[in-house]
Length: 197
Image 1 (cartoon, one colour):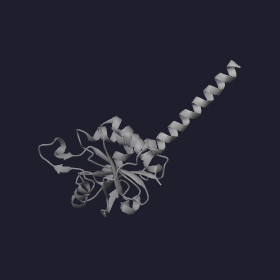
Image 2 (cartoon, helix red, strand yellow):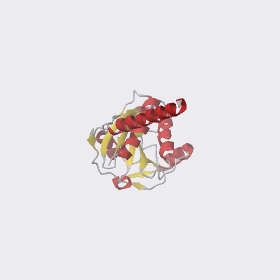
Image 3 (cartoon, helix red, strand yellow):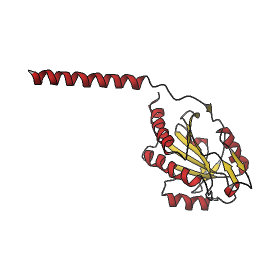
Image 4 (tube, helix red, strand yellow):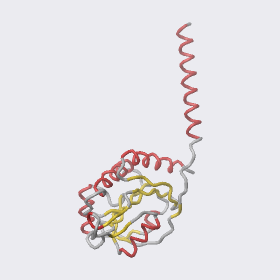
């Protein structure tokens, strides 16, 4: 009798917890829409393929800006972006887009070698180059900063943020690409976006 009562109480408690958890999940507000990314572009990735907005049609993607000779934040950013890559490498609905801000140095060949060292697949993570006249305005459209500066290490000052874009080309979040806790949140938020109807 005591065992039966204990079992009944345990099952009831478990069911209550599951219901509360389900209720909490349903009440989680959607990620805010911080802007839209409606800019057209044509760039070239590490395998010499043309990358345009059509490449990301219907996809969730994460964008950032870097350069391969960056002596400061870029190596940390690439370690963190690799975590995002690994979390979604088998998910075709998620892509990554890294723009070089030093296209004079970061040619297709240089980006190819850089990507090979990271052991990434081009179909999942596009590292793109092109004219500064295209790349720098793109940074502004993402609301990320890029400035050439002879006083800065490596010659550039740029944002270390990762920008999360949904399947409708809306900006849904910014995350410090040098902070592992923020990148943890980015990975969670990508999962939340996938759950949106």
